[in-house]
Figure 1 (cartoon, one colour):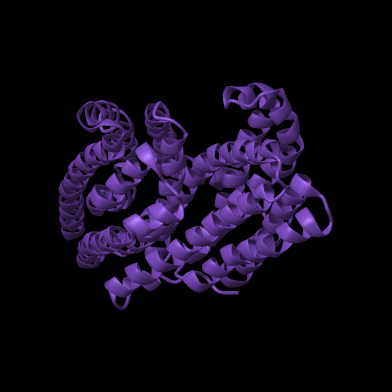
Figure 2 (figure 1 turned 90 degrees about the vertical axis):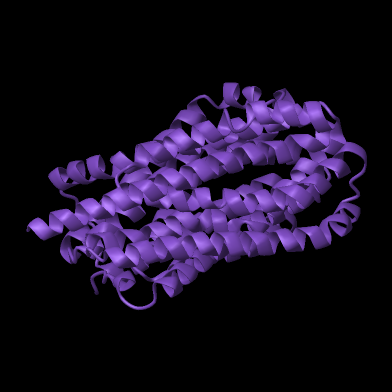
Length: 451
């Protein structure tokens, strides 16, 4: 057994950021791909009710993951700083408590969702037939989403300790099991939607088992609890985790308003939204993974008082976001029309999609800076700023801009207008984060000089 070493305090900062962001992005990409293939397999059953049932279940799982992902980013922050302090024995005990926290939080959320399952599914637009089709699938998947959350926590802990390769293997093992089991259970054994639920459960068991094995073998994670330490660790983690959870709930609010606004222009507009959602998942998975990838690098160097390395990591991350964002924009400009033709988008849907490719790609290069700001806020003691900017983005950065965009340019103006508002919030966020970082590092230097 080994104790975690502060690997991010040594070697090239740029390399650490690149490795962490790329492996985290690959993990997200694997999850996105499996979700898409699951939907594809279910659609091959040629029953719209089953596809709708899968969609309802995915929404409930997403809401559960919004809670657990807040704890996961908090874990990266607290654990990385502890590792930077070289507190190896305390870090191992913290790992156990982090795993327990995510199981309790995700389990409580899943239990509440199951208790309110019928009204929740009706609120999501499911009629009686859809509810009956979804009920068994949800009962199979939602409890095991707790294990999926624990698996994601295990992967993040390994990543925070500098073991990106094993963290990636944990996530990929679940994706590989699901990719093989889905067609086997759905078609081979003729279980249909229930087969998809069983595949999801099996995937969670395998990937979590591998994650727990490596936490024990590589990080000396004990299987015993200490109540006093658990209370202390929970209080510390929730200082970051609670604001992150509140922030995560803002995104679906803004997207719901966008979809309801665009939905008025017909099914072609909604089809364009579906295509754009898939493209954004693939194209910008590096951005989505950045807070969880950057936080351990910043946290370890903050804990080790390597302030120049903290500043270097922030500077490189900002450059990475701009360069990557511009590269993706260039690709979107080239493939906009071929993609619109491939998905047979016409009318308002085609106009919305082309506007996203031509204008939205450039705005995403600015919006990506917000993800850097999130990592800065959570590692520098300002986690509630993450929640504040998330809700500003979902309200002031969304509603008035969508209204103005539709008024000026029709359906095609809605999404670029929202991205414009989001980009303005991102510029404000990264500016405040930069000021916060300068003050934070200056105070630490002064405090260190007085010791």
